[in-house]
Length: 137
Image 1: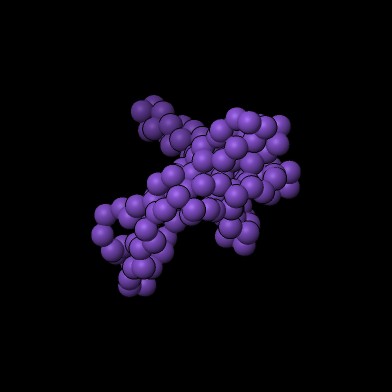
Image 2: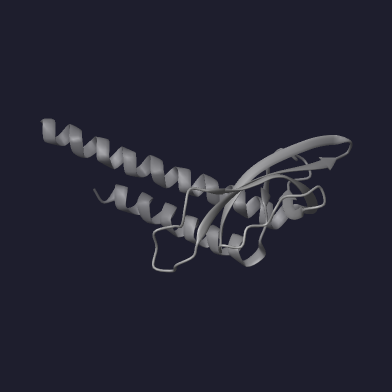
């Protein structure tokens, strides 16, 4: 009987992770289809840790924060991206493209066209794959 409980726990855990991926996919799809673009002011930009331990050398993780204004209210967000060793110093005029939902501006994300579409596709495939895997367990 204990084996049965363990397999059910694993099945539910995989299903929950699949649902989380699908929720993220819905978030990205909503931003892609219904989002509005705005230039946001970069409020922080820093390199995290050292060089990434990957096949491609000279890659670093950069964390950033941004702030934008809609109808007189300020909204902010954070994100990360992978870049090369050229570190851009933050200044007051540094801007980035952000997409937000007009009805809910607090739902926003840094937007990078093709990369966002690729992230949407990958998270959708992973979410559906995990849900199908959990059903067959």
